[in-house]
Image 1 (spheres, rainbow, N blue to C red):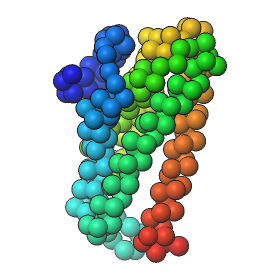
Image 2: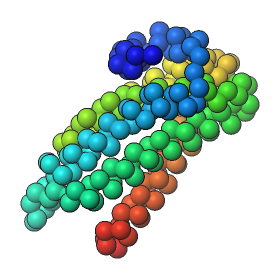
Image 3: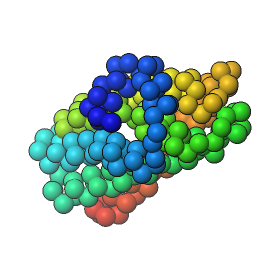
Length: 196
C-alpha cells in the first residue's frame, strides 16, 4: 500500500476507497506499523516544533516558547496516547458489534478507527502554528464523515438501519476516552512541570 495514495484517496474519495479497504487483506500490526504510527507522528512532531519555535502569546508575559525537553516530553506522550486511543477505539467498535447485529472483526474495526483518523492526523501540520489548532479540529470532524462511510460500506457487516446508532455509540465512547486521556495528560504535565 502506498501511504500517500491511501491518504489522498481516503480524504478525497472516501466512499470508493472504503470499498477497496474492505476487500484488501490486512493485519493489526500492519495497520499500525505501515499507517497509524507514521501519520500519528505528524501532529506530535508539528506540535513539538510549534511549541519550541513559534510558541504562544500569553497575556502580560508575551511570547513564550517551551523548553525543548518539556516540548519533547509532551510530544512523545501525545503520540503514545494517540496510538492507544486508536487501538481502544477499534476495540470498542469490535466489542459493540454484536449489539448492532454486526460481525466482530478486529482488523476491520481497526481499519475503521485508523482510516477515519487520517484527516485529523494530516491536519496536524497546523500545530506548527499553535493558533491554527482549530483547523485540526475541523479536519477531525471530516473524519467523522469518513467513519460514517466506513460503517456504511458496511465494514462490520452492519445492517443499514443500525449504522447511525452503532457509529453514534462508538463516537460517544471515544469522546469519553478523549476527555479522560486529556485529563490524565493534563495531570501528568501539571505535576511534572510544577503547575499544581
